[in-house]
Image 1 (tube, rainbow, N blue to C red):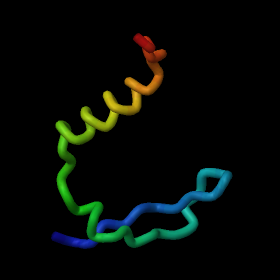
Image 2: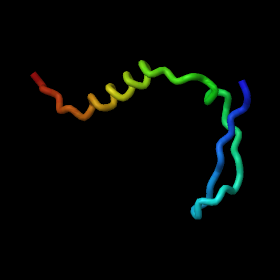
Image 3: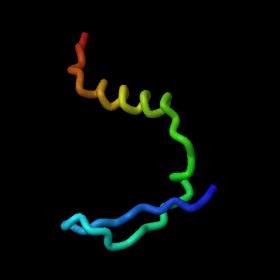
Length: 51
């Protein structure tokens, strides 16, 4: 796998540099883990029943 870089922009929207990202950004995404994290965060919004 090659190195991944990201462009860095200033407030005017002009590219000022490029940043090399860590190897962790080369891994593929896992939709099941993302869904579990989102559901967990959203479930904290519900008011507990307190029964």
